[in-house]
Length: 392
Image 1 (cartoon, rainbow, N blue to C red):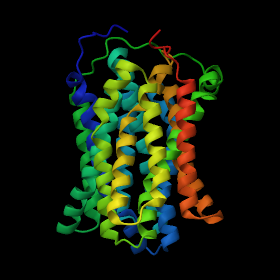
Image 2: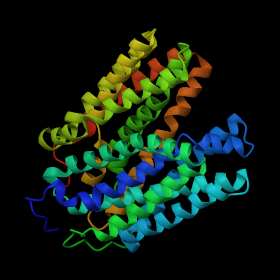
Image 3: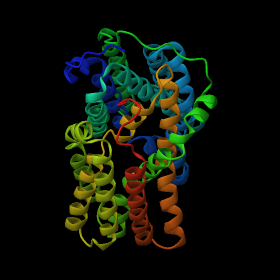
């Protein structure tokens, strides 16, 4: 592909960064109200938690089909289909008559999210030259996190002014706006390799050397990140902090996470992917090991900030590695498999944490995940090559 080395990130902002930002604002808007909606429809706390998890399950289920759709019909057509599916699901969330319909709608939003995220990643992979790929991927990951951070505040304001359905309306409007921006922005691809005829299974078999080595690292990194999302609230509750204090600490940690996405990408572009992978997982691992030693809101917040900064160092890491190893002509299909590994790890992490907590204690489980973080750093450091296929 003939891509100009003078390309700037600003030139792809409208097509690559604005739509995911809008989409993630919508996701953030509904995040706090899904459990409440399920409860109003008669769900027990355990059932409500399961309904929340259905969105993640839908994302995992749709990862590989998303790659197939983007390969066969193009990323724009795939994203349009995902937006239509998500919009219909959100309408059911607002006006669905019972819990079963609401649960199915949440599952569908997860499927739409899988297609949306993969299609944008495939587009950036195709349009951005290698020497600035990590900056593009980390920026895409960064703006997505910013959207998730803004969304709950916007959603809560609309809910306060209207009703609980207002949060889903925010997501619906964001979804429509994202599609409008997507189709009004210029497609900067000059040529795209024709898709090959191989199946996803054949592709996975051909890429097995990468998937069974670096893919393990992706699962470990994602598992640590998934567990990271729940350890702060759980330990805060263990310390007896109020829900408001826990929410503030969680928000501070998230804000620290967002600070480093562009420097992280620049570091990966200049010094290689290991330059972000190893320190990121090492810092997160150390913060996890320190977490059970905290005894107050202040110390918990301090460790949370370190944890957020550590995770921020690795912003865009998994997406960048996926783009590096995606074969020309089958990039979207490969990225579907790659995202499946990440989403699997992200889902397994909290489950493993829960199992270790039940078997031993919460403090032991959190410390054990510090060990998983060190293992992730070691695997990434060992298997990330100095020169990727794209670099060569």
